Length: 111
Image (cartoon, rainbow, N blue to C red; front, top):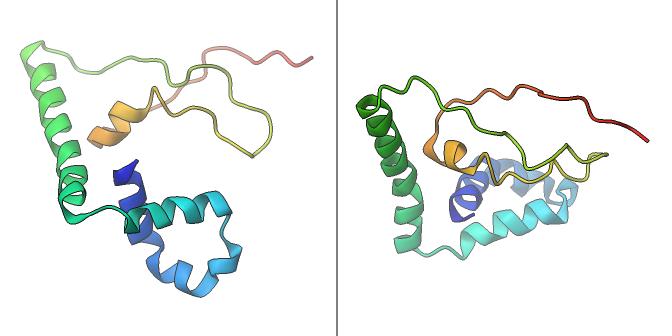
């Protein structure tokens, strides 16, 4: 979450300064988290994705893997716009900066 906070704060710095009241409190909390990250943790957070990507790409090359297939979510998308659901299964790919494609595999049944 340090990396997410750091990158979000960098992207939103100017806009937040001019539109603070329009932000959701959860977003503000994430942006504020970046301020609590010290320089050592910041360096690690920014370097770690590069290392993970290099490791995954080396593994792909060594094992002749062209792509990874993995579930995109732990369950169906939640109703409404309050949440997109768990990002747990997307974390490694997002962290490594690898491109992803999500394909629906089933229809959600509505009651």
